[in-house]
Image 1 (cartoon, each protein chain N blue to C red):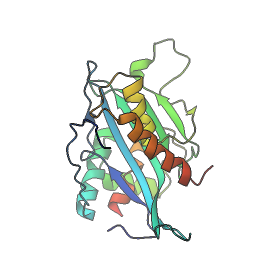
Image 2: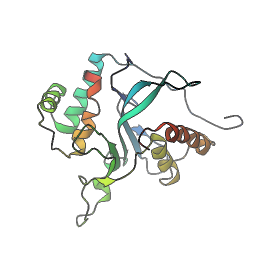
Image 3: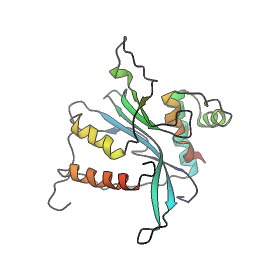
Image 4: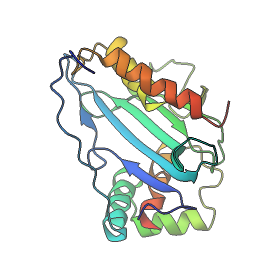
Length: 68
Length: 146
């Protein structure tokens, strides 16, 4: 807005490839749940987490579109 | 590719928490899902972006959750809610980290407002209130849930 003071930097947007997306999911699954991204996807698809109320699971599931 | 009929994921800072300024050295961690949808209204842009899920988390300087806001309607818990971080819970607390505390839909802008207005994170621009109000206004105008 005119007349305002800001020290913000320009914001870059990176569009990741599916491979990079899978790496993001893999890292998150390892850090949050101690499993690989592939294992998380397999468990998710077979309904392993259907009754889960674990915030960590929800956080990793947020990244599933990166891998598909 | 940002194609239609597909839900996309979005992270900030390469999915690492953002270091915020201020004495408490708080961190902000954001993940979202969004979809690009067509808009069939005269005079409007042909497409807009709508949020499909989110997780916003304020963390302590050590990376422990202070509070987390979730909305992930594709899961067992379909309503938006918050989790209190373990750093904010005493041993005899009634609440636990896994309890779902009901909220309305929460915008990223309102989380940033909480950081600045409530948690004393210094803003990086002096018109932060106007900027957030403008973006929140658009959020309220286009939200499809209310």
